[in-house]
Length: 288
Ligand code: SF4
Image 1 (tube, rainbow, N blue to C red):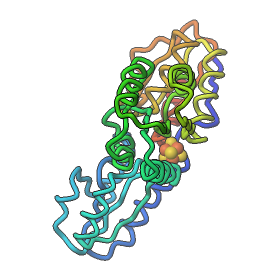
Image 2: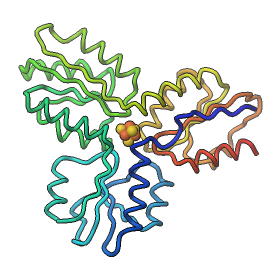
Image 3: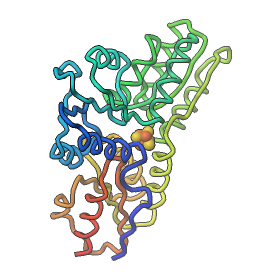
Image 4: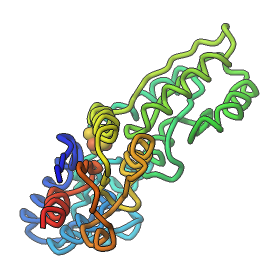
């Protein structure tokens, strides 16, 4: 059996920076607690490892009650008002928001200031979307998929605003982005100033492209990633379109019931928050 592992499988630049940076922060913390606001990445194994290293994960900034604390801000970023809460608490902020996410925050804030209505493409309740929404002001619509476009356009028309910006989550599905872009261009009136910015990050674009290519030439595709990882789910969707035998797993333990007979070529891809250790364990399991 041939095993082909995607070159882009595993930690992206932003996640690597946040995870490695957090470990450094704990090592250097002389006293006080090192908090992390929300899961640093959507991967149970990574979180457990960081907890073992001494990081305390919290969901709400108001849980911080020690002024000697450091607070890690994850790669997905946070809502605008949380920065104020943290400043008021006078804690030391370690901001590992990915520069790609920060760029979108700035963009949303700037266009909102110029009076644009904003369409934000992404997964509802995803931390990155919750953060970005806080920079979009009141005049915005969240578009989860193609089915939401009509109602978003109706809400935009009702707002009487004549300027529209379209942006997306950094890990949004590229194909869906193109479909929605086309729908918006076809259905928005000519007198509207329409600006569409593809804000899907390069790491996501390359990973999705490679997943598409790899899944079209193997008998089985394994996608490794956290069950709550949105970018892993998207890789699964993409691979499933080309390879019906696509399985999404978090760790090698889920492979015990999988049958590998008759499989000649197996492709492996992993989400942006999947550590190399989980990928290696899967490869070793299959090889054995
Ligand atoms: S997926 Fe892209 S935007 Fe998100 S952390 Fe990784 S590099 Fe940054």
